[in-house]
Amino acid sequence: MPHTLKRLLAGALAAVTMIPVAAVTGAAPAAAATNQFRGMNWAVLGDNFSTGPLVLHGLSQSDSNATVRAKANALYDDMATIGVNTVRLPINTHTVGTTWWNAYRGAIDAATARGFKVILAYWEDGAASGGRITNLAAWNTMWSNVTYTYGANTNVYFEPMNEPHGYTSAEWRTVAANWMSYHYSAVPARTLIGGTGYSQDLRDVCNDSRFNGTLLSFHHYAFFYSPMTYDAFRTHVQTRLGTCASRAVVTEYGAPMSTGLNYADANSTDNFVRHIRAVTQVMRANQMGGVYWPALGGKPTGTSGFDYYSMFALSGSGTSLDLTVRNASGRDRIRYGWGL
Image: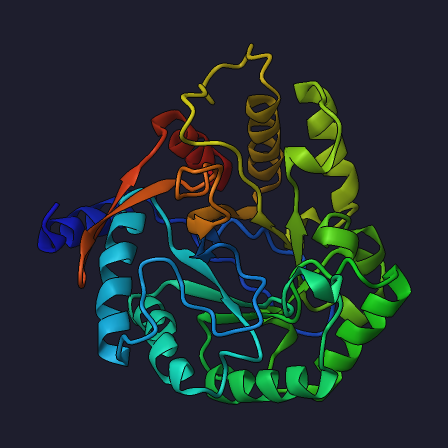
């Protein structure tokens, strides 16, 4: 689809589906619905756990800032046509502050320039790090660079760490609280603190008064748990949100989009369908935002060359990139969860 037409369609859809943005301010407990976040994760093909620079799917490390911006705008045009207004992007210590960072920032700046919200989340150095920050000094230096650059940009949000599963609950909450004290330009209202484990349980973080003014980052996948009924999944999600659904964003949830599953089937016995329907029902009921994993990128499934959870198939070349929805029923259910 020509990009001029895509922009017109995106603008028309945005005008029809505009949702008021709730304010989340102050040091008191945040108590606003988060469905202003209608998002997708844009990931590295091969996943974001890396000991090198993070080059998102569709980008090349030889790209200039202008090229990254042009590619990002082409992809954001297509994302916007389904209602996306938020993108979650990975950062690490091998990206921020490097030559590649100068180019990578094009993906951030292209998003904020069009009014998208951007969640910048730290991924640790590969799976071998065991869910812990590999180098605390480098991590703080990275975040100082990021918050200095984007602290005043009200469209940029900060997630200190993705899936801090290498820490006990008490350890993680101390790490996160120290991060907030150190990086004072990252205002709490634009900070997302991940739940414990694989960001899969918000209760301890929710009940810790040090995070009263923040948003919370929550992950839920079917593969985390044994198969469940739709009702069991829905109860499980609601339980792990604790009493903080009003300030939680489901920053990762996903299921196969390339295998022909019907996410519109309320009577499905497929575990993935039950899961996605349950997560999105909880989101809608609580007016929660969600950031699907992934739009593109992620871990290739088998020999397919792509992650079968990815919402979009990528085509095109150079800066003329296009996205095609892999599963219309999956797209529609994600939109349902956003409140659309």
